[in-house]
Structures are given as structure tokens and as C-alpha cells.
Length: 460
Image 1: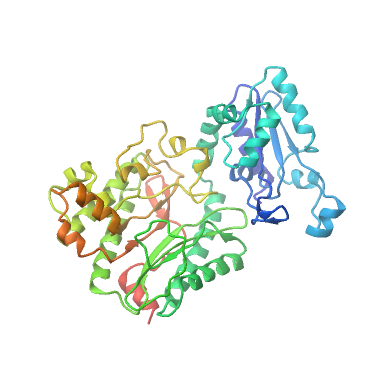
Image 2 (image 1 turned 120 degrees about the vertical axis):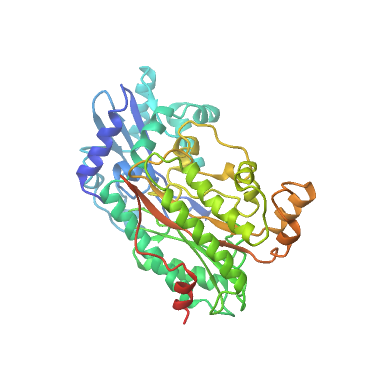
């Protein structure tokens, strides 16, 4: 955990955004996989972690804005809990470490909230992303399911987003620790891949390294020879000479902060000529995107900076043609780059996505419905303290190629005969993590091997 003063300051800043009422935060509970006693690994709610730092299940907190006080709710362990799961310090001693002097049994939460509702006091809560939390809110506040969805507090959401979006120095240090572990994971994968291995072997090693570092995987591992599938979590293929391998994985620290990197590299010792060409286009797009990062620059423009480089690269290969700016406006580039340039990162790998991308990534501006651009998670102007990913890619998706060709879409910008020659290529992506600084941006963590020479050098 951070020092208690960090959590006290965060809560005081949050409460200063409100004129009155109660702020309710429900921590996560255990989540069974297939029966009650066989649970997924516990992961605390990230906003609860941000304000309280306590990583145990079944906790809740209420901040009373009018009184300027905070109560932490939870139950002490029974002897059965201790026998099966081990002991923990008392709730009061854990709460004291994060500056909360008032702790009460979980059963008293309903009474306190009930009195507030009866008195007509506002009870602010965040939108739930787990069914269990939604049911708890229904019971605690006497709401219907529709009311729980409708009455989540926009003021609360905006206040949390404003705080969590700007990373403190101590948060940046945690993220850099996560990124450093993630870089080591990627270097290990580049060294170990060879023909005859399975995708599962690589994925397993990534999870092992994250655990050995004291944390866990920040999100399910993408380790695949089918890089054209953007979120491919299947690991059933055996690697062959000539395959291109895409690895998208990152570690999470014990405190919950994430790293998120993607590398693409050959299974054999060297890139083929075509693989080298696409790798260099993607790396050039990374460089141009990073050079555009700065406070006040809309991330939408960073996205288009990368897409412009990719389209020009496709033109050089004869796959695309025509005026680049017209093609970008029409969305023709999304044939090979159908996702956004990146996203916020912090206590969540897609930071605060549960609070709604309309607040996190768009700040109230309208989101595009255009294919490709609609998948841009972060479009708003960047600010000092934001941590963002930069992850352009080039993908040859046969089903998308066939659909657009059949529809006659973007024929002035796409040479479908040339494009068809690449239908078995797969996909390439490169991703690193950056802190937006007062005058630009800096890479977080050590540099990940990514150029053709750097990757081939690791495989010698």
C-alpha cells in the first residue's frame, strides 16, 4: 500500500467535489468459477483500491460529505475462515493504515444507508459491472434493476475520472514496475519461440513470470500466430517456421497497477521480406504517434497521425492509393487498422473503462460511429499525468477483405487485387506505454526490443 496520507488526501479531494450526501463504494466479493468454494483469483475493485488500498473481499465504505467522515464496513474473520484461509489483522488495524478510524460490521451498512434515504439525503454510487454488486445496490438502496443502471451518479463518475486520470509520482513508479516486468516477459518470449512449440507454452510462461514477480497477469494473454484476430485468447496452435507470432501481454503489480505491451516477431530466426516491410511500417507509425503526444493534443489526432503513416506505407506496397487525407476521412485505412491507437492505463489495463468511455475517453464529445474510429477508446485532449498506450498495427483480415470487396467499398483507395495477395499474412502490432509530461511524453519502463535488428538479435 501507499502511505496512509495518500489515501486520506485522495478521499478529501473526492469529497471536496460534492456539496453534501453520502459516497458509497462497494468492494468486490469472491466470484465462483463453478461452485461456491471454487473461486476465480480475487481482484479488488480498482476505485476501491484507489481510495482505500485494501485488497480483501466483502468490504464497503461510506464517505459522509457533510460530516467529512469515512466509515469502513466489513466483518472480522471467524475461526472457520482462519482455519481454511489463514489469519488477517483486524479490520480496525487494516483501516488505520489507510487513515480510516471508524470501522463497523457489514450488516450495519444497510441501516445507515436506509436512514440516509429516508432523510432524503443523496447517496452517490458508481455504475456496477458485476451482477453481485448490482444486486447489493438493489437491496441496500431499495432500487429496481433499471434504477440501479439509471441512477448511478454522473457527478461521482466525473470526480473519480478526474482524479484517477492524473497519475501521481508514486503511481507512475508502480506502473513502471509493472512495465519492467512486462518487458522482461516479452524478451523471454522472443528468445523462447521456435518451431514445434505451442502457443499455450508461451502463454503459460508469461503467466508464470508475472506471478514470480509478485503480481499477476493484467489481462488474459494474447499469444497467437493469428494476429489478424485482435483479441485472440485461443492458444491451441503449434508454431511453424515462417509463422509470425503476436504477443499482447502485461503484468500487474501486487498493488494492482498494470503494464500493457505488444510485440510481433518471427517464429524462426529471421523476419521474411514481407514481414520486415510490415514491421517497419508499424514501427514508423509508433514513432509518429509518440512524437505527437503532448498536453492539449487530442488523442484523436495522435490516432490519425499513426493511421496516416500506415496508409502511406500501404501505398508504397501498392495495396492502397489515392489522397491520404481523403482516405482517412472516409475510413479506408480501417481495412488494415480497425482499432484505436490506444487507451488510458493505470489500476485497470483499460483504465476506468467500467465508468464509461464517454467520461474517460471522450469528455462529453460525440463518439464516431465510423468503422475503426468508433473503436478509439481515448479521443479527448491529453493532459499532463495521463498514462496512455500507443499500439498501432496492420492486420489482413480475410473476412473483412471479402466483405468490403463484395460491397464495392472504398475502391478508389484500396486495390483489392493487391490486397488479396496478403490475405494469409496475419497481423502485426507494436505497443508501449507512455506518460504525458508537461512538454511531451516519456516511455515508461525500459525499452522493449521491437526493431527488426533488435528482435533478430535476441534470437541469435
